[in-house]
Every structure is written in C-alpha cells, then in structure tokens.
Length: 82
Figure 1 (tube, rainbow, N blue to C red):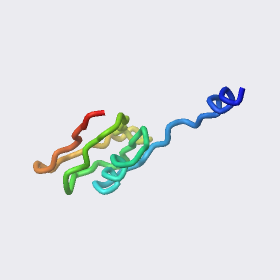
Figure 2: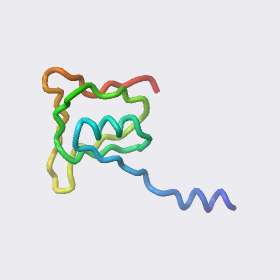
Figure 3: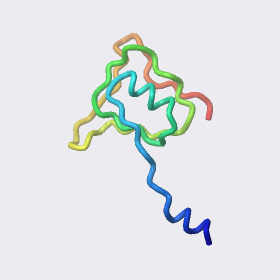
Figure 4: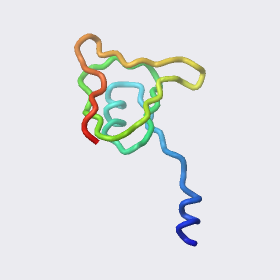
C-alpha cells in the first residue's frame, strides 16, 4: 500500500531552462528529463556529449521558435551511447 501511495504522488518531470551556451551545457550535464530553450542560442563553444534520453523543446510560451546555431564552427548536439 505504501508503494501505491508513493507512485501516485510522483511529480511531473522537471525542466531545465537554457538561453545561452553555458546554460545549455549545464542542462546537458544535469539530470533533468526536459530542456526548454528560452532564447535562440548561437554557440560559443562545443557542447558536452548528451549521455541520456532527454526532450528538448525549442518553442516558447508565446509560440516563438528558438534555434540552436553552431555559428559555422561548433557542433550542436552529439549523442553518446545510452
């Protein structure tokens, strides 16, 4: 009965928010299941390898669409083995 109560009260997945290269890198190395972009990001360096399943949302609350731009020199997302 305790297990049923604990499972029934599980919170929804927490989202990490990112509007810069540094914030996105921190989200990638974190543990959140969702990354919400809060602005378009032009990378200023390579991002860490993504080592887990994650959902990345690129649309803001008011319908604006955010993009990830490597500025012609930095790779965007690199998926490692999970």
